[in-house]
Length: 234
Image (cartoon, rainbow, N blue to C red; front, side, top):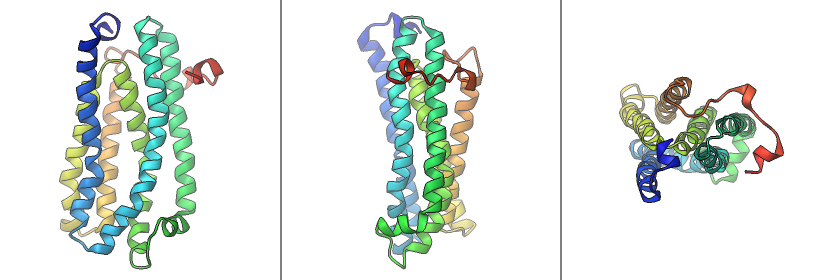
């Protein structure tokens, strides 16, 4: 709160900007790590990862849509001491992203086969793409939660928390990928499972953060969700 309310602008930018940029770089490692380890299985398996990538980015984009949109508003609210409205904005952003994300994931799973073919999956790539994407997309609801939380937690000045949370998930993904893909012989499904578990772990860290009232500056709850235009437009 001191950082947002009274610290010099350069100090606030430095304290929040660097961890945020590092966190974004770490988040980009997920697909890079999957591609690296899956590449050893063959070209078709590698193609499956490439085809699934745009779908994952659309789902993640929902978290950015609600998270980025609310982060600036929440920072301004906390800066002027309006915690009640900040709680409403954070709750509305988080639960809206989860609801819309779940709907998009459902539609993706139902139309997965034609969607993958539209994205360029050939007959040799399609079986691997379906195997990987089905797991990846279903569990990407945790990624929607994580991306939204990244922005919400950063908006209250705790950028280091987001960086370390993303780092924990990325490191776990690096460890699990070779184990699931080669040791347990799960193939491309192992890469998707490793990513899913890593995202779940990051979600649990964020969940613990928002449930610790003495740590978080905002409180998130279903009762605080506000569909009012005055809340949504900011």
